[in-house]
Image (cartoon, rainbow, N blue to C red; front, top):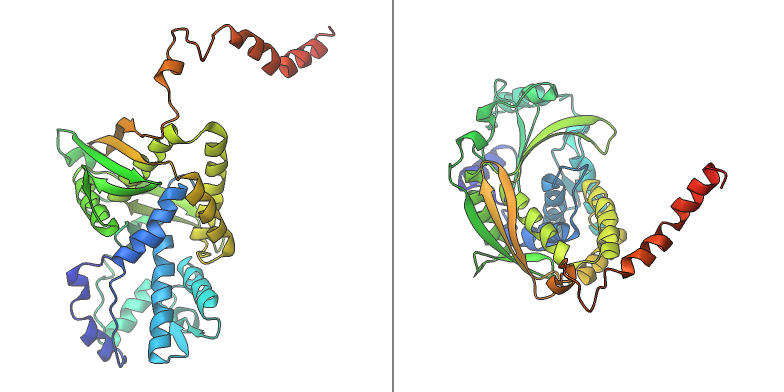
Length: 364
């Protein structure tokens, strides 16, 4: 899922020391970006106005791999380390149910006496299991190729500003380069395919954009969200490459989608995001909406040029061979296709309900 090399070092020894008989490491980067991230990107899915679903999209691909491994080794149960207060327990277990309902699910955090992260650290220390956090630095982080999330510690009070040294993928916009950088994203049928006219695999494209976006302080989000289990939580997210791609794809649609289609797509995007956030990736409803998105974005092909500067993204150019924009129609000059005199009759008919209501109020 794009964990760094350092994060994989010593895992086999740690696993066996913890009681495991075997460690399986799978490279899911391309599958993750191609089959999970890009469909959400194409749909325009965003949860509660800000969250680009980084953790939500990652859980089903991990859980699916767990089900596959369980089948390979003949296991009758799977386990996860999610807390009993978070969303991830739902995401993992709904995927298990969908792909193999016969598997038993073991969730230690819900069964043991561990009630918080400090208890977990003490337990690991007692059993000589190395963990990358301490009681002094107890942020709960989730990292994958799409984003890095931060929760816990001082962030539990929504009034506290995040500390500058907490961020890991993005520089502080104040410290970003003083010169803007222009980049061109190529898009085919709603999915990104190239950077500066260089065609890249999904994971390679996102990796390069993470580096570029991170350098310019792009993609920081600080929000209070409604968890699936009912409580509110505060999280800070870094999504540099993802924010660039989301901006580019959404902007290209301004050329290729008509008004009614765009409105319906935006309404479905809200439901799409809700399903993904709730762990219902393998739900028939999401798969059906994907069929709609696939059809509706057939013509969303073209290029978008963006200017990155100190945490901001500005779209400066968009082009598409399927563009519905016609300069000869949009011009203020009279043309054969659009006669400005026609507007008078349109306004009279379109405004008739408004006029009738006003006449009623005035007793006319």
